[in-house]
Length: 328
Ligand code: ADP
Ligand code: MG
Image (cartoon, rainbow, N blue to C red; front, side, top):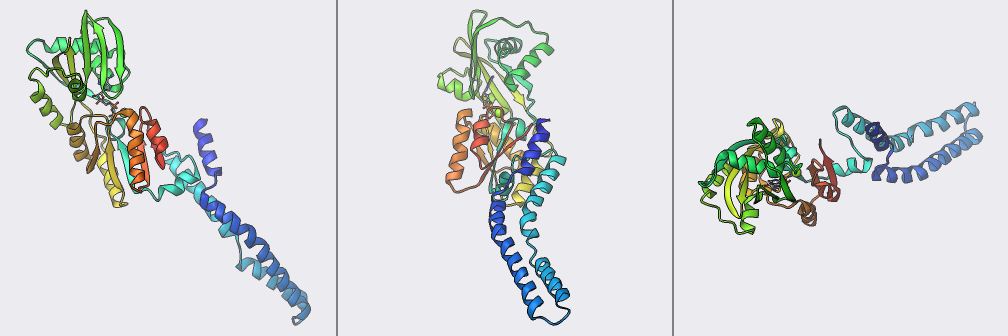
C-alpha cells in the first residue's frame, strides 16, 4: 500500500519545469481567448455574409491553432508515463523533481556491498597464525560476531554453524562501524576487524600480512582476529558481483556519466572488485559517516551526483546526493 501511495504521490507531484509551464499557460490561455473573441467580433461586424458562420469558424480556428493544451499537458503526462513505466520495472520514482534532475546526472556513486555485489559474503579462507588453529580462529570470530548484524558477521556465524563449532559466551561487545567488532570471550580480549583497525591499534601482524595481501588481490574482504593484542588468524570472505553489474556500468558510461565506487572495505579488495565491474574510480576505506562528505566533495567539483546504495549505512549519503537511489 505504501508503494502504491508513493507512486501516486510522484504522479501527482509537479516537476519544476511544469511550474514554469503553468505560469506561461496562465497568461497564454486568456490571451488566446481574447484574440479569438476579437476575431469573432471583427468577422461578425465587418466580414462578408453569412457573418455568423464565418465569425464562429474563425473563432474556433484561432482556438484550435493556438491550443495551449500541449503546453499544459505535456509535462504531467510525461511524469505519469515515466513513473508508471518505472513502477512496471520495479523502479519507484519519488517525485517529478527527481525525475527532471536525473537527466543532468554526470556522476554515479555506487556502494560496493549489496549494491554492486550480491551482499551475501561467504567465508572462503581461514588462515591461522602458528599460535592457533583454523577451527579456533573461526570459533572465536563467530563468538564475537554472533552479536553483530553486519553481513560479514552473519557469514562468519553461518560458517561456524556449518562446522558445528561450539561458540563461547561473549561479554563487553562493542561494534566499531567501518572497522570491526570487539568483545571478551573465554577470558580473552578478542578483536575482529580490518587491516586499518589492526594498524591503528599497532598490533603485530604475526607474519600473516603476506597471506592477507594474496586475498586482497582476489577481491576478498579480509578480517583479522586478534587475541590479547596478537593477531591469531585471518578470515577471507568473498562477495560475488551481481551478474548485471558490468552491463549497468557500461550503460552508464555510454550516457557519459562518471562511475565511482565507494566502500568501507580495503583499497586493494575494492580495486579488484571495481576492475571486475569496469569501474575506474574507487573511493575505498571510507567510514560510514564520511560517505556523505564524499558526495558533497563531488558536488563541490560541480558534478550532479546520483548515489546508489542499500540505505543501510549510507542513508545520509543518499539524502545528500542530487538523486538518491535506494535499492533492495
Ligand atoms: P561497505 O562500505 O562495503 O558497506 P562497511 O562500512 O559496512 O562496508 O564496513 C567496512 C569494513 O569494516 C568492512 O569491510 C570490515 O572490514 C569492517 N567491519 C565492519 N563491520 C564489521 C563486523 N561486524 N565485523 C568485522 N568487520 C567489520
Ligand atoms: Mg554497506
